[in-house]
Length: 111
Length: 111
DNA sequence: AAATCAATCAACCGAAAGGTTGAATATCAC
DNA sequence: GTGATATTCAACCTTTCGGTTGATTGATTT
Image (cartoon, rainbow over all chains, first blue to last red; front, side, top):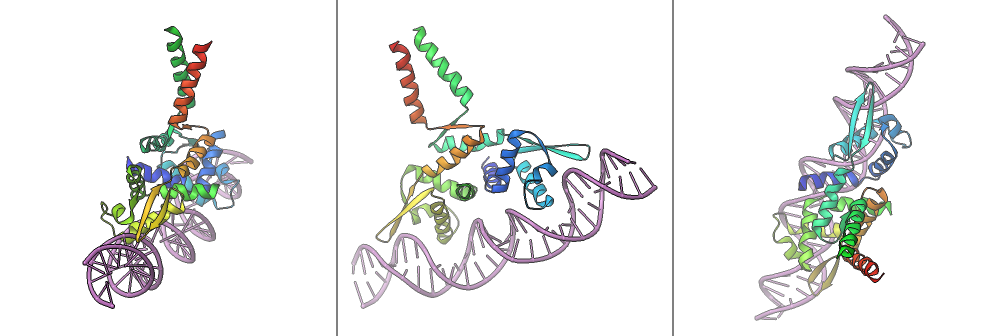
């Protein structure tokens, strides 16, 4: 589990890789399209994508000759959990936080 | 700001450094005491502490011949903020979260 | 079948990371 | 002042990182 944190944190430590993740927020993308905005070679981008994939931050699925890259934000939950166990921050999903809040409010008014 | 993320994420990518941060949750520590549980040399620990310091995750204050290391969790907020802007997670400080919740409950019951 | 396109592989390169050891620099205790 | 203690510096080593280029493999188009 700590090994995962090593891999995830170092995957996130590179600005190109973080940019790629943000791009993938929009939509799934082919490797060539991911590479397009960057000045570095396609091979370099391919390596970055493999690192992100290895960290579990994305998945890649090959359809025909095109390999599609998909964001896999659950891996971020590992970071989230570490920060939580670290004790200083409480990373909470906003939706569940709102659900929790509403539930609390309902309980209060029911009494 | 993105430069900071590079430095902070790569500081967090090393398990020894994360262990040190957790140790410093307990209390401020001298460099030698930080080094004690690890098998690597004191010089190596000193380097790790400089990296953590450079990332803003700790501060170091020299009193006499002893250099005291203090956790500086605000740097973690930079990560927190990135994850927030990334859009998948909502890192919330537990204390302010609780204050907010209590306030909401009070407002509700006052009506 | 031939040419094109998507992506990776393989070999290489320079720089940085993480470790070591031994010497150096302060500061403290006697 | 002498000796011990706390920490860093300096030089070195090996491995990893991020990049390059050119060749290679598969799928697609014409």
